[in-house]
Amino acid sequence: MSGPPITELTTRAREIFRLVVEGYLSSGTPMGSKALAAAARLNLSPASIRSVLHDLETLGLLAAPHTSAGRMPTEVGLRLFVDGMMQVAEPTAEERAAIERRMAEPGPIEAALAATSAVLSDLSACAGVIMVPRREPLLQQLQLVPLGPGRALAVLVGEDGGIENRVLELPAGVTPMALQEASNYLSARLGGRTLAAAVGVIREEIAAGRSELGSASADLVERGLAVWSEDVGRRPVLIVRGQANLLDDAAIGDLERVRSLLDDLENKQSVAELLDAAREAEATRIFIGAENRLFSLSGSSVIASPYRDREGRVVGVVGVIGPTRLNYARLVPMVDFTAQSLGKLIG
Image (cartoon, rainbow, N blue to C red; front, side):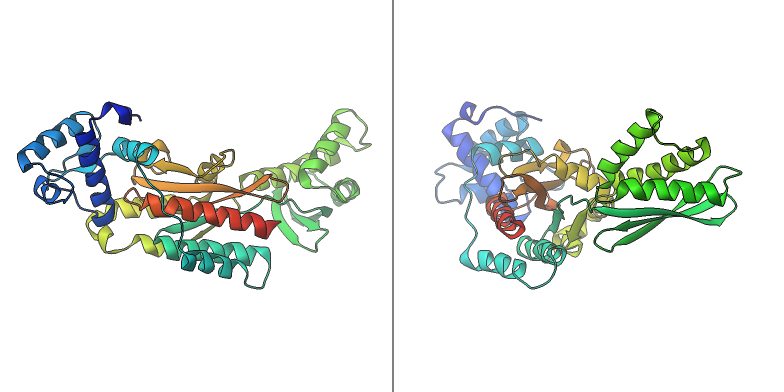
C-alpha cells in the first residue's frame, strides 16, 4: 500500500490534502470544498478546490463516500500523511503524570501492566494493549497422575509455588508403574530449568538412548512434554483494556466494523502475533487498516511501541487499537512515552 511521494504534490495540493486529513481525523466526517474554502489559509474558490480534490482522489489519496460530497483520506492517504506530514504533539504534563501514577500503584508487576493498559485506553479513547514480558518460570517437577482408563493428569509445579495441570490422553495398556517412572524421570530433569531448556535435555537423552526408560515410559514422557510445549507456545500473554471505548457515538453508523474489531480483539493469539511484529522496531510503529491482516476487515489502526529492560533488551510491546480515524499526532508520542516509562518500571 503506497502512494506518490509527498514531494510530487504541489504546494497547493499538499495544503488541501493536509486540511482534509486533519479535518477528517478531528471530526470523523468528510471535508467538502465549501468548508475547505472557508479555511483562513486558503485563498481559493470552491471550484479550484474541487479540481485539486479530484486530482488527489485520482492519485488514490482521497475518497468520496457515496453519501457525501466531501472527501476523506484513504488508507494510502493516511499512510502518506503519517509518514510525511504529521507533526506530533508531546504528551501533556497531566497525561504523563496520569501514566506514571498508575504504573506506580503498589502491587505485583502484572497489576501495574494492567493498570497501564487501562490508563492508556482512558487517555486515547481506544483499546489499550500490552504484551507482557515472556518470563518462563523455573520448574520443580511434573507429575503424571492416573485419572482412569486412557487418561492422566499432568501436574506442573514451578519453583515459585505455581501449579498448573492438563489432561493427557494415554495409549491403551499404560500401567501406574510406567506413569510413576515417567514422572520421576521428568522431575529429575526439570528441576531448576525452564520448560524449553528441559525439553531440549530430555529429548536429546531419549534420542541418544541414554534415558534408561522403557518404550512405554519414553512415550509417556514425550506425551507429557508435548502437551505442555504446545500449550506454552500458543498461549498469548496479552492484556487488553478499554474495548468499550470503541462503542462511542461515532460507531453507531458503523456497527458492523466495530463488531468485527471486537471479534478480532477476542483472538488474543492473533493480536499478540501482530504486536510481535513491533518488537524489532527502533521506534513506535503504526499499522493502518489493511496493512495488517488481522484488522483488514474492520479497517482499524494499531499504534505500538516496544519497551525494553535496563540492558536494552525488548521485553514486550504496548499500544492502542482503534478506528483508522485516530489522532495519530497525539497518540504516537503518548504510546512512545508509555513504552519508555514501562522500561523504567521493568528495570
